[in-house]
Length: 242
Image (cartoon, rainbow, N blue to C red; front, side, top):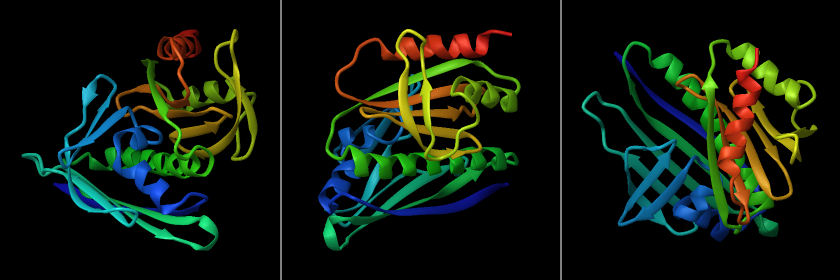
């Protein structure tokens, strides 16, 4: 048993069709809003995340500033994921971008994976829109840090919210991070398993990891050193105490 799925998201962003194209069809562009590090070469999109490699995704359509699509080959159990981006320029310099994610999840327990994937893609698309509106064209440094194993997710989110000064809502200003060098930003997205915060030079994201730990999947603009161990230590301190 398994489940075929299709989800779509769309937004109008303050960016040109060419800037949207750069963000969805190049490795540096994808780095600025998706997960881990990506590379687009020889008709294949490759993404590394958390020390592992996602299945390569072959480009199936590429019309500059109009459409970009790619899909992984079906695994022996039928699993695959496909992405399609549609771009339409609007008057005044804005652009409508639509992302369609489809595929097949195998197994009798596909529901949990589908929920995590759906909520995660909501966050990634919101980050794409945020990037295009506030940081279009800027080079990004992805930072991925995993916290310790978590057994109680409701309590885990409570702890993160407490660290921000209380349960946040979209548009709230919050302060977070290590005590010696905290950052301030505005909550740009939140759902049941993710949280996104925009500062003047970064997009900070927290994701409920499917394998049991809170994941900091940040996108930083500008050269910085030591960010990954810094955020890993912060997560360990946040979730390691009683």
